[in-house]
Length: 286
Image 1 (cartoon, rainbow, N blue to C red):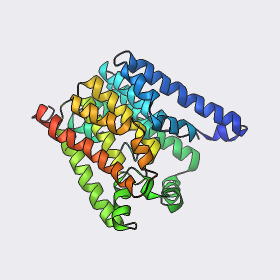
Image 2 (cartoon, rainbow, N blue to C red; image 1 turned 180 degrees about the horizontal axis):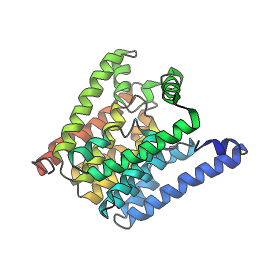
Image 3 (cartoon, rainbow, N blue to C red; image 1 turned 90 degrees about the horizontal axis):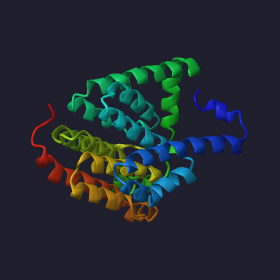
Image 4 (cartoon, helix red, strand yellow; image 1 turned 135 degrees about the horizontal axis):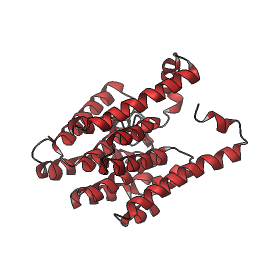
């Protein structure tokens, strides 16, 4: 429903509109956060995933910007509106799947209420556009192996499983995903700073998702900005920048078998959070 009007336009016109929308949102995100942390602009200017987001016409830049806007609303006490914005990140729900845990453990009930309200509206719009059978159609599309090509080029535990075993192994992948999700759940429970916890959850999402490629590493830029503006340790911020800023991770994803190092680099961010951030907040929120 939201994108179909573009399909009625000439391709280049639709492409220009889509890219312009993404660019405006990303620039607004950078402008708003650069006033607080000027290094935001430097990170964006040297971010290969941000470049890939535009050259591939992806939507992760939109989700990244919406996340940033939501936290500006949270800081101003507009939790419900923030939840509404975050519900739009359902366009990349597989990458944000661990984020709701943060708001549960930090008892940000109004954010969750806003997210549920926004989700209900989106569900209603989906039914209006495609009927009540749309979830089945969506699952059929999402389960098509043709859209999950080259697992060795993903940022996820699926990449690690594929390269270690030499083939797809769903049982091993799921075991790793569960272990990773439990680790992230523990971290966001123990880390008292909300921005830091969400940055950790975004990092975990890049690992436990079944589908995440090089452009999705753009979420590490969001994590770094949240770490910097939310008061995370220099060790966690520096590790995240080292993983997400240079072209190293991007290049490794196209150099089998060295792409195995990318999920391990993301695990390293979580390990720094475990060793550094957890001791800084010895009690769970509330």
